[in-house]
Image 1 (cartoon, rainbow, N blue to C red):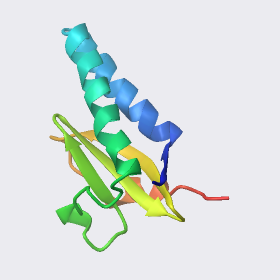
Image 2 (image 1 turned 180 degrees about the vertical axis):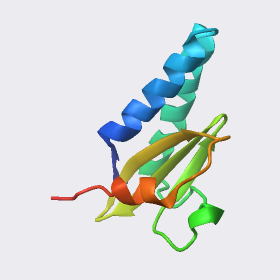
Image 3 (image 1 turned 90 degrees about the vertical axis):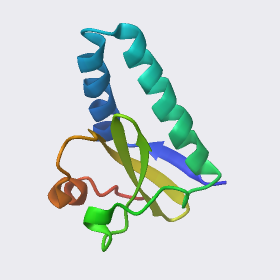
Length: 105
């Protein structure tokens, strides 16, 4: 079992998405957040279960898809760092992931 760490930017991403959804559907927003946390909690047991994103297959990131979100993470030193959450319809920019590289002590 590996340690799962949500970075502050990733938590902020998820919060922003949920707040937008909650404007019209508060219950759906709450359910989305629960589904995202359930999906990412499994990474503690199966860290390589996420797919390699096709747009950035040369980078050390994986993703879990929880519609309408894509949750990006990387595995470093026996830890899983959740680094970015985006809506599926957005364009993925490699620079965003590079800027969010987790720092490990």
